[in-house]
Each structure stands twice: as structure tokens, then as C-alpha cells.
Length: 340
Image 1 (cartoon, rainbow, N blue to C red):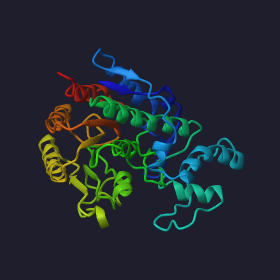
Image 2: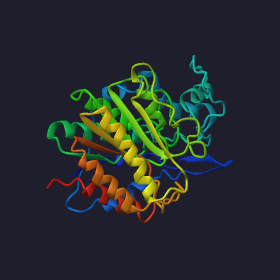
Image 3: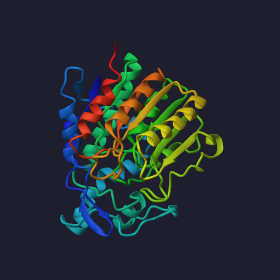
Image 4: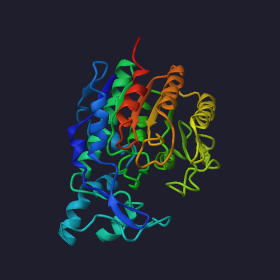
């Protein structure tokens, strides 16, 4: 399988986030990508630089003002407050986002939605490269009709059109879906990360041409808390094109696969022509961040069921944090899609 990865993605490093009142190191570190890369060293995987497809594919999802903010805020922050000042908001805009403040403090609170998306010196370069991987994988699918995997790091599914959050800055799955929409009339984004794909949901919430289908831990007890509930079904033309399947924190493999079966029903009803899979594996039993108990066997079974759909499919890496099972689980998942 073709794997898209750029060394520039290592440039986002040293990020911290606020967890239960403590500012700690983010688990979304270069080590997780290194673990995945090590597991993809076999001959069945071809690791390729994505190339630079420019800003236009990103602008199908994110407006220019947001991209300019991400590109320039770190340098502006250091100039304003010094090199040791954390680029984290202290005043969040919340639901009232009618005006972008001119102050860098205000702008940061407008464009960053929580305290889990610290912007570092290399964040823009890494996020841009991550998005280019998503574009490269989608273009590979369009050109060859063969699946491809974008090893996106930083991940993207919590990022909205104009808001970074949850370790995510650019929404790679949405960018890939928009790339596929250049040819396919109906695309499904299927997110199996343990967290709700709330950013992807918000981007397509009023559209009927892209199904967003996310299975995840119940947000009444789990991040992102304020989005991802089963009664969120889309709005306007998109009514019915947004699906959330929630499971409890103590879910076992059988319950996890039952959630995927419900998600499958929604996808079959939508009848997409192509699929983008948000490949988050942070529900793994060994994941140091997710806190859930799913085995690698369950993820392999999900892969088998996805292959059974017989649809053009891309994979975009979302969550999944450094453990002995991280890389092998992803490699095993992707091997299901080897061309016979």
C-alpha cells in the first residue's frame, strides 16, 4: 500500500495541553509517528513524500484568514510576549464568534477552541505537510483506484473550518473528502477514533453530499464533551447526513463491533461512491491516552468489514498514541487492503 508521509511532520514538537488542571506534555508527539513508521517497514508498504499540492486543497475546507493565522501566530506571539510564552488561549470565544479580535490574545481565543492545541514554532510546517499527505493519498486513489494511507501527524478530526482544538489544526479527513469530491458525487467520512470527529461534523453539517459517520466513546463522559451526541443528525440540506454512534467507556470488542455495524447501516443508506476512513486507534487497550479496552483483533475485524464494502477508500491517521501495539495494529489493519 502507498503510504504518504513527510519528515516535516516531525517539526511540531514539545506541545503541552491542560489535563485536569495540569499543563502536561501532549501524547501527540513525534514518537507516535515513529512507532507507526517502524511498523510499516515491510515490502508491502511504499512510503512516499506527498509533494506540495499548494494551498488550494486546504482552502476548500479552511478560509484564508484561518490559514494565515496558523502560519503567523507563533512568530507574532514570541514578538509580543517572549519565547517562553505558551501559545495557548486564556479567553475562549465559545459560541460567540462574530468578530476576530485584532489583539493576538483575542485572535488566539477565536481560532483555538481549547487548551489542547498549543501552537509551536513548527506547528504550521507540520500541519501543512500533514494535510499534503491527505491530498496526496486522495490523488493516488483518484489516479489508480487503489487505496492509500496518509500518515497524518498532527491529526485533524477535531479541527473545524476556523478553529484548532484537540491536538488538531487542519482537518485532514475533510481535505481528503473534498479532494475526492472533485470526482465522486457522494463521499462518506467514516471516523473510528475513540473521540468524536466533531470538527469534521461541523464542516459538513449542512451538506448532503458528504456523510460524516463517527463511532466514539459517549461524549457525556468523554472529550470533546459538547459535541458528538446521537441526536446530532445534520441540519438543512445535510439533515440525516451526520451520524454519531456512541458506546460506553467499558465497551468490549463485541460492543465496539456492534457500534460499527450500526455505522455500516448508515453508510449503506447513504450509498457513497468513495470513503475516507479516519483511522484512530486510541480505543486500543494499550493506548496511554484513550483509556479504553479494545483489542487489535477488533480493529482487524473492522478492516475486514470495510474491505467488504468494495468502495474506493482512503485512510487518514487520526488518534492512537505510543504503545507497543500502536504500529502493529495499524499495519495489520492496512494489510487487509493489500491488492490480491
